[in-house]
Figure: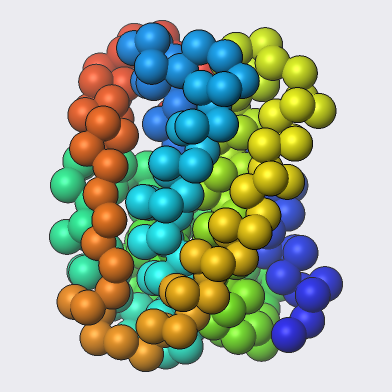
Length: 214
C-alpha cells in the first residue's frame, strides 16, 4: 500500500466537493439532536457504524473490482432511500471522478456513480488495495461532518479533531471488516441504515437558506 497515495485520497483539500456537505449534521443541529461536543461525538460514532460501514464496504468492493462499478452503484442506490442523499452522493461522486481524472487514467463510467463507488474506482486506478479504499471511505464519512461541526456550532477545532483521533481505532476495525468482504456479491454487502439521516436530508433539502448542500 502506498501511504502517500492514500493520503491524497483522504485529504480534505481534494477538490471533490466534500467541503460543501455536512453529512447530515446541519439537519441534526437544527432539530436539536446535536447541541455540543458530546452530541457531535455521538453523531460521528453513529454515522461511522452505519453509513460509514456501508461506504467503506462499497469503496473496498469497487477497488477490488472496478469493472463491477455499475452493479455496485445500483446496490448502493437501493441502500440510499432518501432522494436528497442520492443526489448528494452522486454530486460528490461526479466531483471525485473529475478530480481523479486529473491524477490517474480512469475507466469510463457513463453515469455519475455514488461517492463510495467513485472512491473505490479511483483507489484501484491509483494502485491501492481494497483496505486503503475502505479506510478512506470510513474516514471521510466522519471528517466531513466533523469539519461542519466547527462551523455550525462554533466549536473548538482542536477538540473536534480530538474526536476524530479517538475514532481512529474504530475506523481501522470497520475498514478491515469492509475489506474482508470486498469480493462478496453486491447484495450481500452491508446495508446498515440511519433513518434519522434520511428524514433529516429530505427536510434539509426544502430549506431556502442553509450552509451546506446536505
